[in-house]
Length: 343
Image (cartoon, rainbow, N blue to C red; front, side, top):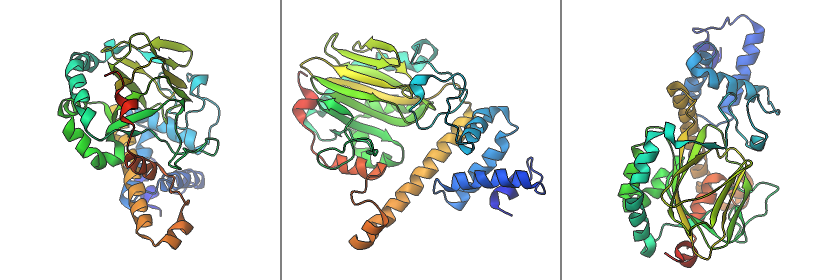
């Protein structure tokens, strides 16, 4: 009997029913696609089995069902502006912008903004910023240097990563250089371990795009801001950013951003788990994310150890996966004038 059925039979399955075996076999195959280790698969499969009857895992159950059914239509309650988001959890409250009043840590972060700003500006003589790049899809044009795809159609976008899922160790020097900012982020219990300073050069436009999932919300804290010149559109709503005033939005909605000034715009960006997710659901999705990241890093390390001929036979010539795009972009020396102009 498969490892999933062994775990699940103690919870709710009758192993004699062929239909149930077929369903849970699909569950196993789905989680196997994440490249998880046998132990990790056993853990997430046990969570999946429990989600059928545990109301604290209802979003996990709905998400898994949508994946198994390869649902293409938007679930009820989701917005058409989320249609291009690749990973949607059904039944999570969907709104473009969120009031910060329900999130006490936002006010704490705003109070720290002057100190975080001073820490940010102390980086002007240091390295750490890198061009923002993402994995290029078939529909996207690759960057001129061949490293992923750029997100802008004019101007430059550079980032200074603090937390980035499975690549945290790569950015440890950045966190050591920004202890105040790092402590402020780590003090937020629902942080998603994705945070960075984001600098838009003068006259830059970030193209319309969707974030990777609705499991999280995005917080932006403007730190260096040309007054009245920086806008953010999320869905049908547009806001003008204000220095020191944080905003929360759902980046699974299509969104775009502008710096229409002749000076650089720098903000702190961080993600938090969606407030509708229970602690059990956050634990499950967080575990699955971390386990799949570790599996991908292990596969990448094995690929890099191959000789050139075998490596090219096993992967694309430019190694255009998430990890290689980020690490290769980190080696690019960013344009200081684009990052710091006017500061």
